[in-house]
Length: 453
Image (cartoon, one colour):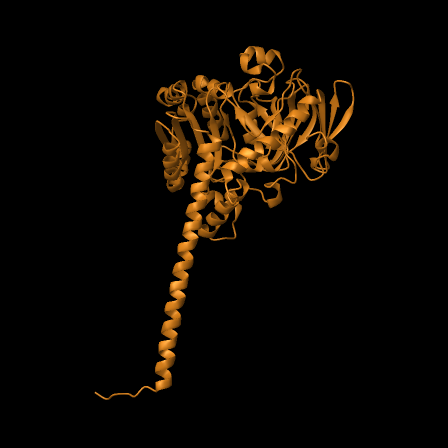
């Protein structure tokens, strides 16, 4: 064998390159370890926020978590946090979007007109046992586009009918509930179509953390402190003794909303009859109330698309007379609106009005998320269908007939849609016939802000 003499300079260069490559690998490994710790810490903080503030889990309480299978890792973190908070049991109900799609597409249509007793019994019985409920959203907005929307609406109605006892315990402040978001591949790619699936998911998780203020030193303390900010707005709106609100913007919204006597605005956290404070939505930026059922007149034009049961509705509007939708249209998804409005006799009336400033944290993204939980907190919005009893003085002590008699709409559906824009103007008329500006250029007006002290 012939030996080849390698120049000393080449050996030194080879050794130096090997050393530098090893250094780079070690640095990269160290960087990824640090990033994993940061991600894990954010996930833990998010889980802590949802369990401790969203649900405000109590000692020996049953916790029910419903979420997509893709979020199993985060759901495990939630389960751990719930037990550490004192939960007696944690029941996890995974849902698989693909399985749900196949079922909706191929099963007998009659299966969607009823809710199985075993499904209804689970919610009715756990609510009777004082459980609290965490629903994690993150559905692919386009997944159900090829499914008959009337089929999905029929099952939603059947479910609400069969679980009336469960719904009543939530609506009448006997059980905590919270809706929060998790990043999933289908949803992430809809929001960020130009990114790879992996990067889109990472980006969406970061968005969720940001809107929930997970980057704060202690997000639990941050949201506890925000209760006071919400309360100031609520107290100011209630003290005005408003009779009606008028909405107007260049998009086409021009509508007068009457308020029922004894209306109450609420926002931020809600309070159970036993005194427990919880956040039904995280994130949340809204203060909300209920309109007078028969007191809505004019046109409301949606400023955001609406993802309803996996079907997307775009560029839509409603015309109201004496509270009821008398005309409507959509560039895409009108058949979905058909199914919503025909759900029951009161689905065509409004049940909620919500005020959200255009300069909110979520609105600053200038990004459509195709998920109502987040999009509704970037914009003033309304909801078709069911109202909330807490939006009327003494409402929590009334039954459905009494609430209806006092002007609060009673329905089996509750569907939010957004109308807020950067030029939205809202004026209020008080019982003394005074006119006050509530919103100017999409945000709470200076005149109203002065009242929030």
